[in-house]
Image (cartoon, rainbow, N blue to C red; front, top):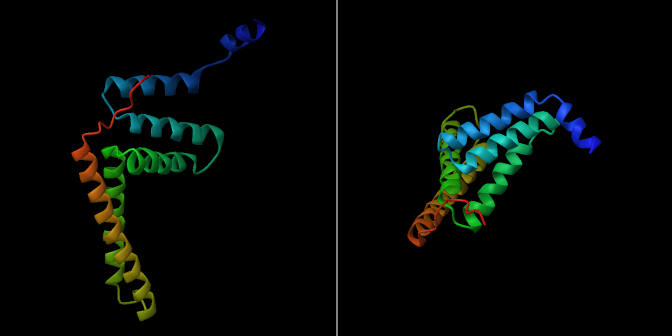
Length: 138
């Protein structure tokens, strides 16, 4: 009981702020994925553990996207891969790269193109299966 009383007396500034942000995001109808990512970013900052939010995002994409075929994480990943491909293609056009470097860049371009095709097929399959991109509370 004394421990509970001590917790009540502790200041709740940062924790209260993130709690209000979460509720605001829910009221705003934001995606559960965005809310989880927001909390992961807050935890990364408060714990001093760099890379935690990225780890959570990558894990959500793998589990909810590829494994459970929720469309939203796959669409997010598709957007990121397409953006990277555009930057890689722009780099390929730069004259300062050697032929050997251009071969490696071309290999990266080919892999990104294949990944984009894979993601588009997965998204199409998930949409055809009609799986909702919602977290259902048990």
